[in-house]
Image (cartoon, rainbow, N blue to C red; front, side, top):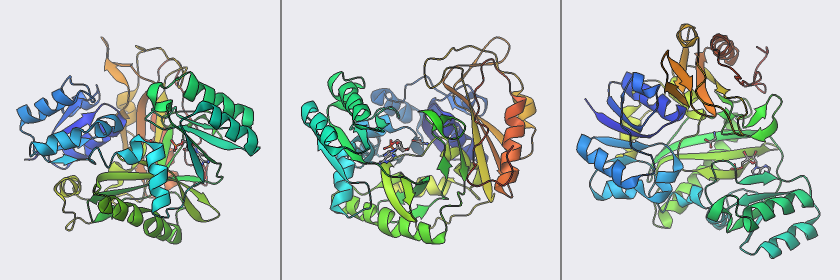
Length: 424
Ligand code: AMP
Ligand code: GLY
């Protein structure tokens, strides 16, 4: 039996642990969460405590480590594990710069002719302010470094762009992440998430997905970590997918190899489809959350060879098969999220929700209270359902989501609206 350690603590990691457990592995998670503890062993080690993660992997004598979140990848956890001969799924520190620095990733895209919005990079706040004032058109302001989804402002005018520059660049609201700013042209179109798993040279394409980042129905309100996702999205037809692979994925992987950091692990490209043409918004060097919940529930056969093959540099034997034609995930969030939110509210109905056909309830931010699970995060649960059609997956996911109750529960009712015939 393979022993696998999953690093991280969200619903993405719960979905990975769920998948690997079903595929027959002995799965450990660090730090994991209360939902993961139901199906695997959890260890109280923070995801970004590299020394402790390495020590844990050694102590458990694992066959494979899968790193979920970006921070330990950017800090070099995979390099540390690889140096000790421990197989690790995820990119090296050098390759993780594609996510860790937006200035680096934009320059990389320009070097390889990968379609993306035009941009300028600034380290001087006054120069950035002068640029947006002179531009007289809507621009997007991005903090260069990791900012947990809070580092992008799609400004409607120069004043909003200037405000973002002041907050990120001068007030350093996001710390050093804002020391360098990327300012780019605004694109308009549907957004999709495209994941591949790469072994340094070869790659396996996963199914396209779409996330819903805004907190409210109709894609309104502030950005969140993701309020729901589904797969497959109709705007990625065979032709668009071909363009994504030929114009984005393949040149990216070739560029990584040419620059001495062959990409191993999950490459998740955030794209906007502008008049049928895929344009890159950002690279992520890890799996998306909640996209992973959809991908892992759809995946057919064992996923262990996918993770192991990438970590060991040989995906040649891995076939992509999708058991479920469609999957949809609805996130249940705490009152106040994405702002400050209360914790410790009792959650009811989890068992009844899990009884709905095709449903798996992944935990994002829960804890064990006296009488059962309580809320413990902004995103609390990721209720995921498969179906023969997307409408069926949506009906199941919402039927299950409606059986779960906690005070102040926030849920978007329109996940998958661009693909569904019937609203739930
Ligand atoms: P990022 O973290 O770079 O993906 O940006 C977060 C969100 O900001 C994206 O999901 C888009 O909704 C939006 N965004 C980023 N870049 C652009 C752009 N150039 N034009 C329009 N919206 C953008
Ligand atoms: N679902 C978006 C992300 O994981 O960044």
